Length: 281
Image (cartoon, rainbow, N blue to C red; front, side):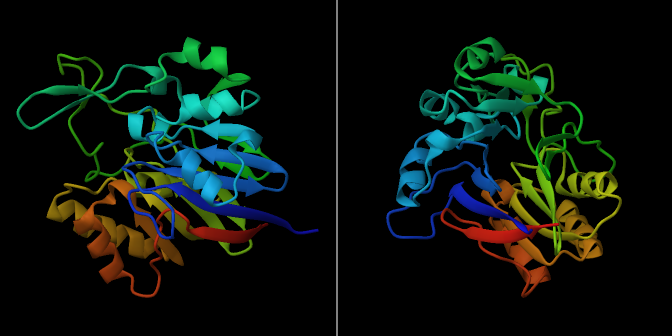
């Protein structure tokens, strides 16, 4: 008996339908059999209105996976846990650390989880599962855990720190992706790919015994990337021979343009309202 997985983009910088709202952030709704998974929660302003518009009941959420601890991926966490207290939260331990971004003039800005620390999340969720290693979150759907950094051209993509004085760099070890195997190959969902999109895809290939990657959707954090990084990213992506590419969110306009130009016929829009249905293998 076949098992279907359905993916719906609930939060992204752009919206693709009447009555849908965009914001700087990312959230995927994944239905795998009877399980309901929310991968990231955006900033929290548009998640619930978009879900309602698309006929999705967030109250049925079984699992909330956090790609990392930044506000634009965790801001909706409190709202979802209020209506779905039965949900389990899956996150890397480092997601709950204080996080800051330093602007060009040196000004620090707090960009961590709005809800608070791990204890506060535990008080509101059914359970919190900490993931440093790959883990199956429901039958056939996995989270990578911490992603090895093996390339020499990818970095976290910005001036990120663990302290307000901006002296302790944040390597964003909490960055992780969701993946699952389908009849067409592996599907990879990205939050921001602060580990590097190529590092992420290499690791997923390693975890899946080098199975082909069918689709990659989500943020690739190429915004502000150097020309060399853009060129080498495109070169490496070509080597994976991916059927569908849906770069969005923090990919940036230059990164989006480069990927769409390099892979004609393979790129798909990944804005709010985008849906995809696949058969799990």
